[in-house]
Image (tube, rainbow, N blue to C red; front, top):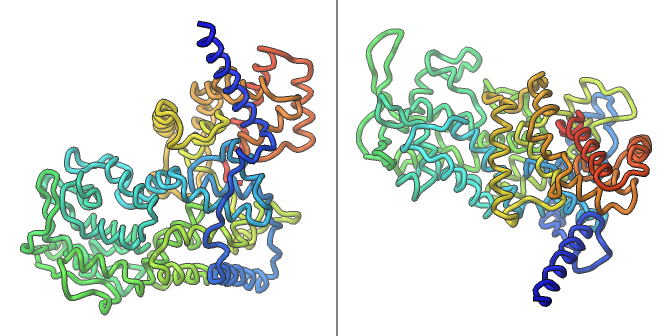
Length: 537
């Protein structure tokens, strides 16, 4: 009996010591994690970053603008974590980050995040919005979770992005065994008993080419003279032979696509054809295979540009172009977009390399504030890091991760991961989401503010409970200043200003036990409801 009791005491003491070490780490080599900077040290990588930086500097010089100063390293680390995993870094990760050599800290952190399953899961969710929308899709015919899980697996393996897209456009098979076919299955039309060719034509051009050719679905495009109604219908014709039997997608090799002319009347058979760059369309293969190769051809600049523009937007909160999808082929292209698109195509559409390139640019590491008045020209030319509101899943991701000093990832207990999944899903439903344009500049609403201030979830993550970070900080912080600093690091990924520190230290002075825990919980609630938590600052 005494041996069991001694073992129990040892486990408890060990757990407390480990927890305190996470909050206030000891100088122990066994707890250090070395972040590998990966390809960021290679000469060809540095050359591309330099070329991108110079393209922006030329524009600033042309307009007589001075860029904002460089942001603090912790601010950039927060941006990277928000853009790549959907939440702020944990306190555990902040401690690890600050142990890295200064000159390699940010490069190593970015590469470290790309090898974390949180990156793959988050990017899969975000890209799936562009590929198949946010609706659940037709029951039985479409498996949304299977599709997203497949995307996450491929992102984690860093499969060529072009290969992913080719599979989505051309794959055949069961929607469970061959998850890529769910891209096709998501458009299943109950009336036609088949995938919808028009919807697929729209999704292919929007998601993969960054073009809104669907305006030509019913009439010739009014902004782009080169796009006729027949161009849209010819693109849809690539899916005319695609069949859907219960859960199986296949190409029969027979059957044609007929366009119903609602203006002149009658139906007309349309042969497959692409709206531009016809020389890139291969002659062999099924119709969908030919289209897939045309879309992802390294010479198809629209494919590479669209991908770079989307990833840039996911990491900064705003696309390089005015919109993710252009209305015309003649839109002015920023030099940086073409530089990154060219490198993306040259390196087999390597998504992780593209992300590291963006993270290494001067623009990504600029401050969002400056010691001078920021003008529209600064904002338009990326002379200052853009301030944008976070998406709903990022807001709640911040709250959930901040309530734990340990990193919440695939190594976390299954109960922790399930709780996060259902909490996030419920919060996003109540908070509201912009489905059509996820990068639209929108203002917060009164309902969203009330949910943050009065909602059970946010309140529950702040209150004085043993598993919450606020309670653990109250219990183990060596002094009041350390407690305040740790709370700020955990929630906002920065240290408090002297004024903030002094204010809250005074509120903690002389408190002990439950009263101290309550005051730390109040500080957490204040930080959760600060404007800063909901922006990409």
